[in-house]
Amino acid sequence: MQRPLLRGSRAAATVVAAALAVAAVSGCTASTPNEPTSTTAEGQQTVTYPEIRAAVQAAEPRVQRLGIVASKSGASNVLAVGVVLSGDEPVTTTSLTAMLVAVRENLPANIDQVNFLARDDAENSHLIDISDAIDGLPDDVTVPYDGTMTIMRGDLDKL
Image 1 (cartoon, one colour):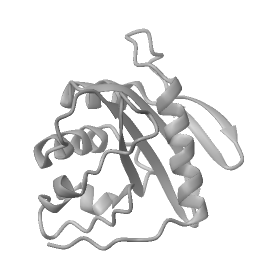
Image 2 (cartoon, one colour; image 1 turned 135 degrees about the vertical axis):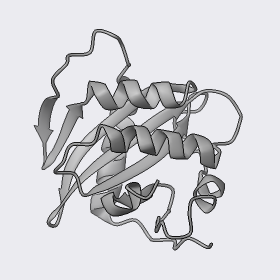
Image 3 (tube, one colour; image 1 turned 90 degrees about the horizontal axis):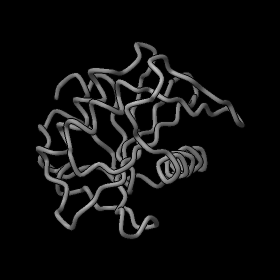
């Protein structure tokens, strides 16, 4: 099934840039606090969700770093998740699904949408093209992709 391509809006670009910045500087350690912590800047909230971090790393061992940024888009609460992956292997549908299910299983109840992107650990400015992995998702899952995958909670629940 062909997925719709969307042109990124300024707000989406800001969220993605923030997620990438967080992913580039945040490390995942066992000493992460048990409760989410946050800092706010210009309507965005950088949040440390240790459960999401641990679950995504367990789902995909190639995850080197993980950034999470919470924001508001209209009436929707959005969680942007950026992963930095090691290795040259492409992201498979199985791997993508495992990471998304890990996020979903630990997602706060108030989150309506997840924006997901993957970056190469060898070249941090390089987004990994996950379009082939997205194409393998079930046909009833609607996932716009323009370098960042956008998935609504209802579609996450179908995985």
